[in-house]
Image 1 (cartoon, rainbow, N blue to C red):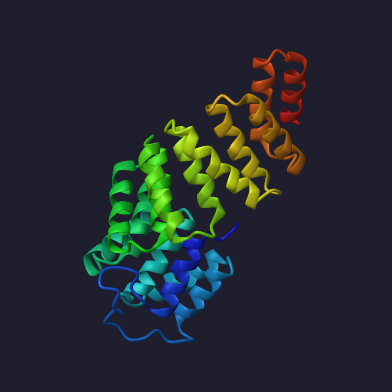
Image 2 (image 1 turned 120 degrees about the vertical axis):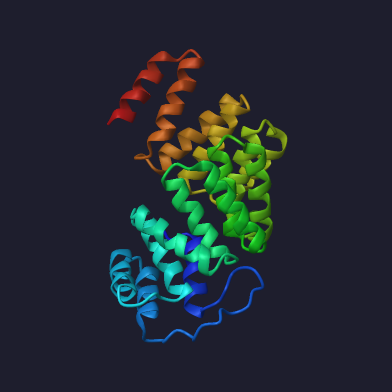
Length: 266
């Protein structure tokens, strides 16, 4: 599993014992022991060994209340491992102890998303961006949640801010462009997707993303080219086959469409 920039930022902030929120001041707690359970769990999480990291923190938190940084890491691990109820209980504690820590609201948003509480997830993500307005991954999360509740215009604003804060993140360009196209602003959205593909010419997902946007913009020829390129780059990706078959059917090529559907099934 590819570790996102958000996870890297969270792990880094925990390891340093910093508050990515509110006043930006360090928490009024002792600095973490470099060889202690927090450091060990952080290292394991950074290596993708999430279950081991969770076990370290679970054992430690069974002995004592734990620091805010430890609880933030534990809640994040719970969310990533699908232990939603345990994560929610941990966030409840954190909201009492550190109500102005943006990390708490960000992990709360992800947990609420997992339990299909979109309104609560949105409120938590919005609070995270208010507390830490310079953290791009909180704006990214807000954009994703707005897309999920069918607010592409609001999502585009969030992705735009995230892209401004993290200009080298080309995936954000794709998300921003897709949101604009979904909102009906093809003129602004498609150039962003063009830039996304230009910076990632060998990425099948980038071509797929632009192909889907071109379908919305009714540029079927351009979409067909993108889906064919995505299939060439990554033959196992299902979405381009399905959408290319639809285009072929709509443009009077039923035999090719049937062939593409057959390839999709296999």
